[in-house]
Image (tube, rainbow, N blue to C red; front, side, top):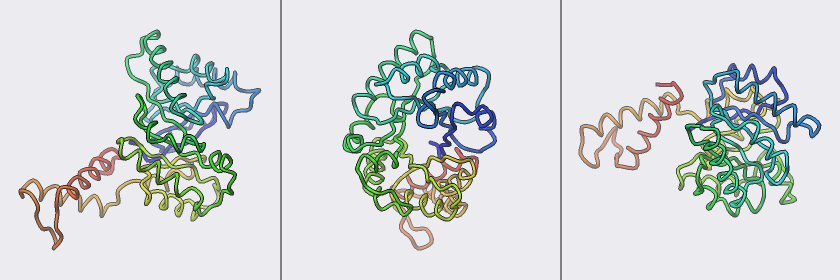
Length: 280
């Protein structure tokens, strides 16, 4: 599970080379919206060469173009390989996620890729929100990313910093993802100069059940990593609870509070996250 996903345009070699310095848990190399139509071919070739030449200590995600377009097919043909951990699919629906899973299986077999490349559907249309409970159950889906800009455009509603207009899709995606035990990744906060706004937005999404957040600027990553990681206080309490649970049978009391299985399970998840993020 990743706390932070950083979008980097695949036609920006300087940013791509610097990606390891930004402390993001995952990097989304973007072949879609951030790359002009006239640069699609050169971007996918540049990304292919970059992936071939480097090793990575972060999760490698590639956002491809729509599979309804020739660019999407060319993206897959060019970049699918053992260095890619996941493909991000724009304007996801049940149908196009299934098509992508089928194509990935064929590529893995033909190219002798000894792992299963995951899919991160980008839910950014009304139909995607309505189908999210089905999408999370499809093969290869490891998480859902909410695309609020396209979604609000599709819904013909105004996008604003306070985020009331995306409360429902955030919550629905979070519920679906937790039920399926996959990641619920929040939409980027697009004002890169508003740190207070970023904090408020990330906290709001986390309270609704989002497990991580995407970003469009490296400066946003430290804030996101802190908000979506367990605090020192939470880790310390979780360790006490798990230690006490190893001694007691069934329900017990700690500091005057009743500790039962749901609380123990939550504590174990906190410890697991702390280890994942090198906080313990």
